[in-house]
Structure formats: structure tokens, C-alpha cells
Length: 116
Image (cartoon, rainbow, N blue to C red; front, side):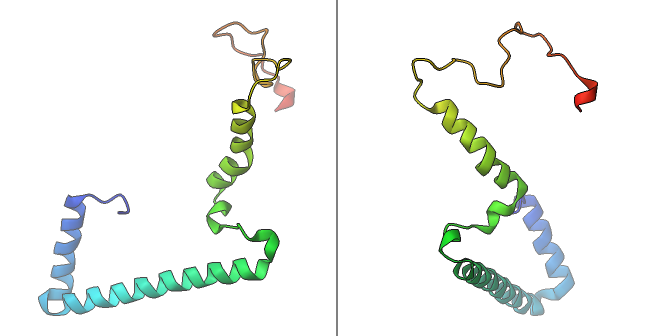
């Protein structure tokens, strides 16, 4: 959970026990649980409202897709993987179009300063 191991969780429990004390710790934990549940419910409600108001074109919309890493993976890399894993046609070149067949193994491609 959140990249925390058992030693970190134990340290957090000890710190919480020292800060809140044994009398108020159960109340603080219950309040934190209620707050977390309310935040999760608000996020789910916002997600469903967004999906219903966007219309049928965006029925499979997921806000996690707006993360740049997920966006690139979904829109760029998936298409490349589909093309690469597609059944090979008879006239298809065995190398992907980005590979230069003139370069030998370990050769560095030419660098153009004006192109960058």
C-alpha cells in the first residue's frame, strides 16, 4: 500500500499513538476512515457524472487515460504492438519501418544537428 512496508507502517502507528494518545486514537482512525470513504465516493460520483454528461461517444472514457504515461501507451504504443504482432503478409518487410536495414549491428545512425 503506497509503497510502504511493515517497518514504515509500524513507525506510523507508533507516531500516531504518540500524537493522539491511546484514548483518542480509535476516534482519529474512525474519522480518517470516514473521510477516506467520502473522498472515494465523491471521486466515483464525479467519474460517473463525467461519463454520463460526455455522451455515448465517450462511454469507455477513463480519467486514468489522461495520465501522460497511460495516454502514450494507449494511443501510440498499442498501435505499434498491434501492427508488429499482426500476421505477416507475403510482401511485408520483416523489419519495422523505423529500422534502417543499411546500418550494421552496433552502428550508430547519423545525427543531423539541423533536424533537432
